[in-house]
Length: 197
Image 1 (cartoon, rainbow, N blue to C red):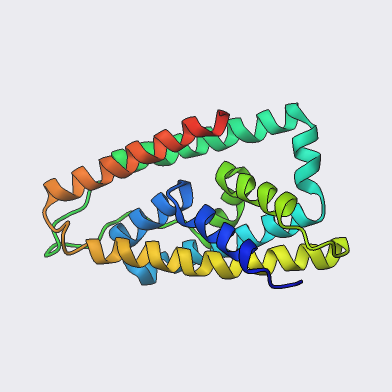
Image 2: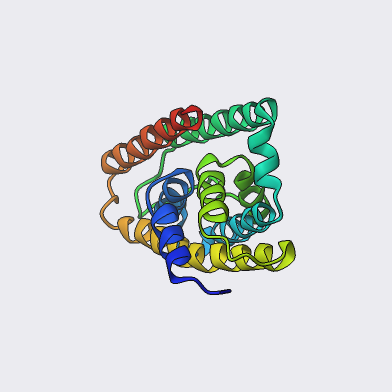
């Protein structure tokens, strides 16, 4: 069956819970607003769909079978996540009456490429392809997983980026903004530790 409600439910729970994408999109929405964060958002949606597709083709099994490659990917993921956490920790924002934040949100291609080292996306993709296979040929299974991942993740990304953008009014004072960004930085840094579990 191409559409499996259990697969979609599993993916929703896996992708909606906090992880690097959720934390970064929430922070981007708060820092830059929904409109400026759209390239980042669509990059996540596209990148997660690609990961779903390649997992359906068997690339996920290849990575699991090669511990050295898995370690390299995990190390790259942890390094990038810690780098982003450091940027969030040091992010400053002028009060709303002054100029806009002079930083830049993640681009579409940066977000797409980040998915290749995002351990949470790989974990959900591995589990989805192993536990919810439909017995289709590799190309159809790949298309099925890509469609499911991208469609579910579009909703998830829109929700979290919008939630971040809505927080902007609550974070109008520099002190509140600093606390929020440092909490996001700490959560993101903690997610880097989970890479090696």
